[in-house]
Length: 414
Image (cartoon, rainbow, N blue to C red; front, side, top):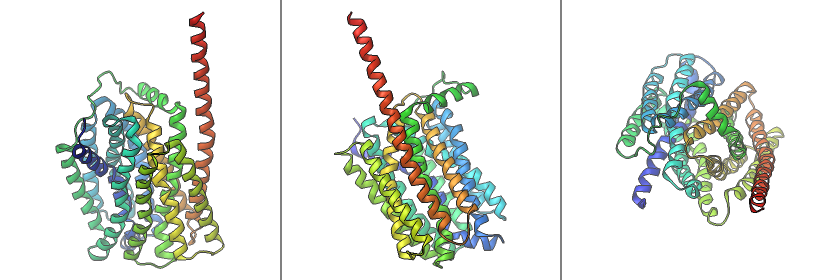
């Protein structure tokens, strides 16, 4: 029986390794204009370092998933965190936008190990019925990063320069490696029967993907999250170039918006006492779609100013506090033996779509808020459609399985 203190320690460390991604994304956002000026390029060009980070995470998860199932959880995790530490140090010394874009890709390849391992270890260490609650608690730890990171990044940029943001990320990586070593247990023994041959890996991923519950909730969660990545990619330009806020003010705005995400994730834990994850997700997506539509048309017709943009963005992102933990838990629920592969595939889908939407926002950049708000609205509506269609497929499969069981029972009783 796991004690409360032990559970708290595990969730804290799992939250720390999960937060590597958000911290790596959010902390340097207020520095975009400074980086662009220092490296003699545009903010849109600098934002491609965000897209390269998403691409690196997406690709890297396909690598770490099989490794986590083959060699256990901690060894691949240590390798990834070490790569992240070195890449972060090199980012601090980047002398051009192109080198920063390439190094951010390498940084993501290392950091994604923590994101894959944390989801797999939640499935290993906790009961399936508790997974959604654990993911909600992880959201509390992860949710602090969008509040602390941009604000801290803004002050670091103003006081010391943007290079020191990556120095701090390097130090954080060293602390996390120590925490993993001393606190986190090995949750799964190496599986020597797990093949790392390409054909076997592809079969494993395909076995995960063809499960209706997985592809429905993983794509629902991923496309909803893509709206968040569109906001992350577009918000520096919208707030600092269009609304002319300072780096420090942008950090506080980002923190305020992110606070809604934290509050929602904790309300989700309370709602799970009375409602199922399947009941919570569609309501959250309807609310998110309404917020996205209002945000887009408000920007299109100049109905909303700075305050209205912040309020609607906060409502939009708050919905993620309900969507992410429940879609993650439902995606992972059917798997135990190959939880690493399932976690990797779920994360790769999420980050791959996130990379596309963040790049799309940069590509469509036209000195207005429309690229950001349009992509946000489109993502929420598409996510809701996928949930509705996938839900019908899941129910159909369940009905067919019940019919088959009844048929077998009837035949055996004759």
